[in-house]
Length: 224
Length: 207
Image 1 (cartoon, chains in turn orange, blue):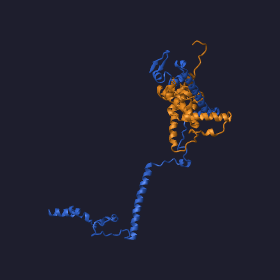
Image 2 (cartoon, each protein chain N blue to C red):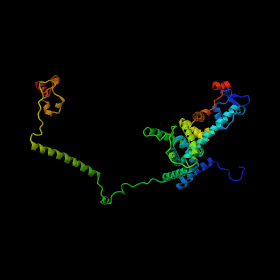
Image 3 (cartoon, rainbow over the protein chains, first blue to last red):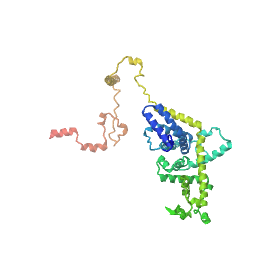
Image 4 (cartoon, each protein chain N blue to C red):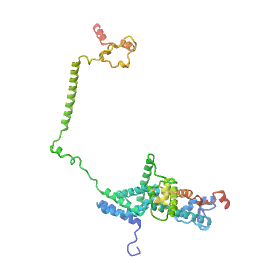
């Protein structure tokens, strides 16, 4: 090392360090201290986990529960955590599996129960959305809310895998390799899913904004 | 499959053949997501413009997506969820309480005798009760029969001798002795072929 003092610790190293500490504390039966340390991990990954679960499940209450379950599961099985794998990837994998289970059980449940209220785009509306909220002006709220709703509706129309890959790659900024280890999909499959998701979303959200690929249509061919 | 470009950079053969060297949507998307800028973009204004439009669109979608999630999950909600997670972890860590049952919940009066009933005695009592019930039942039936005389004797029903196969299912419940009087024409032939006990005795005596 060239600089004086300790080198900066990356988020990945910090996570791994905390996870190892939690593991050791659990083994030493110092459970309260283990929980306190684990709370750090919760604070660091909670928002990210909620975004993933929310976009994947398209329901705030389900996402809330899925993230809770994932953290509890991670705490209970932290003994199986391997340091060579980033905690973030390990945790996301647990979360995704939980989300998949929830989707399956939701499909089973919907056969027997009335579904949640749907908006114009056919997206499940969370009951919390009906409550009055505080924030920017009502006009801005309506406009941005409408655009968000359109995006959510378009995301809902994507196949499950495409949606998951798109969320992890684009919203969370993960590389194809990271998404591959999080989802268990092949790296090239991840890239294909990502491209298809983007193409489909562009068609759904802004058909007029989609650039015609030169040389595809007769008109563009003629232009060249 | 790649094709060497004049400028030194490589473009896909399909791009070269089908799109006159312009980048496909996939190539453009990959270039934007991976950050590896193809040399073609420096020379082609059209593809550069497409890349800008696509990049803006991707940024916009990302911003909207994050906003959508963050609008739902406010800091208060995150805090509440964190507290809930910690409560659940506490429950996980607490060892399960074992409720002693039934020793502690047994009533004191019942416990005071300190006697335990042997299962053998219980079995013997059940058997004795069964025997007493059966004997008592038979004795009571005999007593009743003696009082009522012939009341228990079922009425004798004459089976029709002449009518062929006149015995119907309604007559099936005859007492055994009445069955000797039954004549079923359909079975008579079979009966004649079958040696009876008396015939066997006669044969033996004769032989």
